[in-house]
Length: 186
Image (cartoon, rainbow, N blue to C red; front, side, top):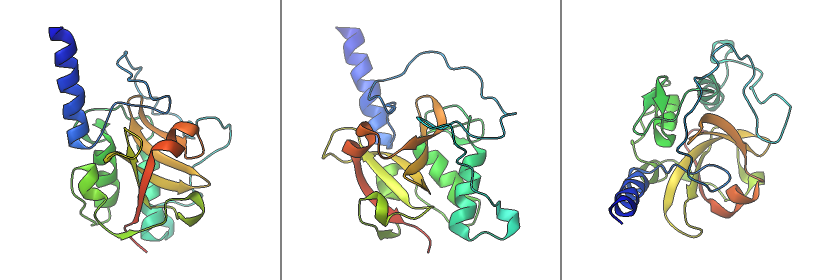
């Protein structure tokens, strides 16, 4: 009983910080994680064998939103670390804050506060642009507990329980929990 109560307190605390330990399957992942493969040239993509890396890098004159997306892609393989805000490990809002912060855009530390910035975007894939901030709720219809960064083609990058990865908004889990979108830069 005491163990269940302690686990509930930890999960509630994670939700309060704006990031939960839930992946696309909706299951909590608490198992060991292998170290990131820093030699990988293309990021892993769920349910797809195609590359998701944007064609240009910030040095090649991309717009700010594209540069933010490229910075987030550079974090692929970084582990999930609760409260993490750098390449040693990120939580969901830490990844977003880090990627935007590299271009002088200060965002709050917590998911729900990040989702108050910028301008609202319709919550549907066709309305999204790369660089848009996406909000997800752990409970369908609930408050935001997780954020990601839209990269295009229905995909987004985020720090989940298995680390920084790319997921697809068309997966049933993400469709059901997608509840907000904000455009931080034009």
